[in-house]
Image 1 (cartoon, rainbow, N blue to C red):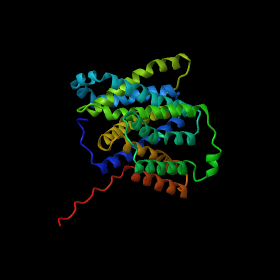
Image 2 (cartoon, rainbow, N blue to C red; image 1 turned 180 degrees about the vertical axis):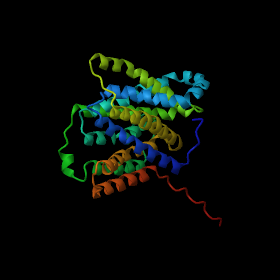
Image 3 (cartoon, rainbow, N blue to C red; image 1 turned 30 degrees about the horizontal axis):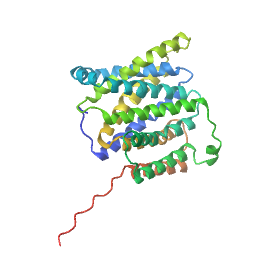
Image 4 (cartoon, rainbow, N blue to C red; image 1 turned 120 degrees about the vertical axis):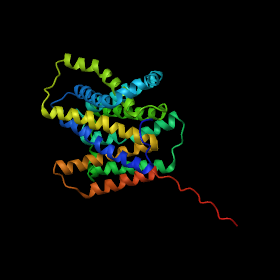
Length: 308
């Protein structure tokens, strides 16, 4: 996309790591304000905050490229409605009833779903190294989320919120898949402004229904702070960084970094909730980074043979 400095592959991985660190706070914040902010209201106001920030930098380039966006309105609609609005709405609905463990495990299926979609839609073969890297990363997620206790995994109980989380996973995976088809020259911030405006409009009737049902919230400091975080940081900033990196390394490689989300969530618990950094944290980190390395490494180019 135009208007953005091209990333080298190593820097794209750094950007993805930072993006996932920011995104890790999204479900955490969503669960933290369950009692204060209803899920649809959180989704709606999240997009209000995101659109307000993105408009500051994307309104002018959007006007300049309005004909390009108009030509691709179907793609914009698909990415903004089921992709962005659907993902966030179902995530916040899901964390109302599911546990943090279930939410983290289901979210960890994003790389698998994205790669499977690529294989089916674009008929691309899944390489052995990519499959091995995904498997290693998934084991790392399980070790981290289960806190090294196999008994937790054996005693898992699934609730309706898990199905909503799974729908959210498919929403984000669908969005990631469509990133491959963006037209060249599209301004990145203008693109973000368009799809989040579509997401905001999509949520209007659902938010109206929620208000009509007598479900509302008081804009306390905690509620406003949560909305600003998920709207500005976990949406405008994190999604922009993810899109930027995808343009450099591709959707398949970029999606592997979603495995880092539970790692950063665990580290947040250590930093802010007084939890202790334990052996299973280290094992999870090593496995996840190892899996990402295996999944994203490129085969060495054969050296030219010496002249006889």
